[in-house]
Length: 246
Image 1: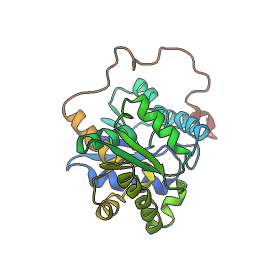
Image 2: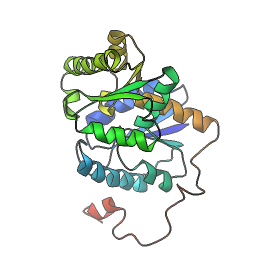
Image 3: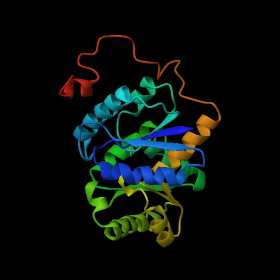
């Protein structure tokens, strides 16, 4: 089984961290292919960058030649998941929905700890659209930007713990989800200090992908995620037109 893990931003070091966690989480015999878009924002912290990233991710999917059995989209609540489900024949897993689904199997309520406060409404919107918001006790921001997560691991863990403790003590969350792909690899440290289950969306999505592919299932194509209708899309895929040699 081969799983494609796609970092929605263009920061290669973050792709490497996400790849390492995915490989660590995968079963023996599962191969992880990890990549990022060929163009787009270095991090995603708002609707504008999210919209750009969604197109860049779809562009990467349209031009990637390696075969794979499932896709894990490693942006927490970023747009474009539904479009990828239309574009691809393989099952698609978003790390925000995967984390929330797994968290609800572990406790009655869960919280999400993410990056900047401006990301909170976007994550809540994603969970609402997915039907997962009802059991979400809170979504809390650490105040750290996406790229700041990699600068100082100790500072990042402490910032996550501050908000996670508040989610547990004040919001009565029973499980905490790490709300950014850039937090990959921090779950064990946070869980050891927090004392409640902590879910990393990348690991959860890889596990769900293995289960779904193992059962021989994929996205339903009968209605909502039917393939795009054949038509001319000018200059698509965009990356082919950006290359010097066409």
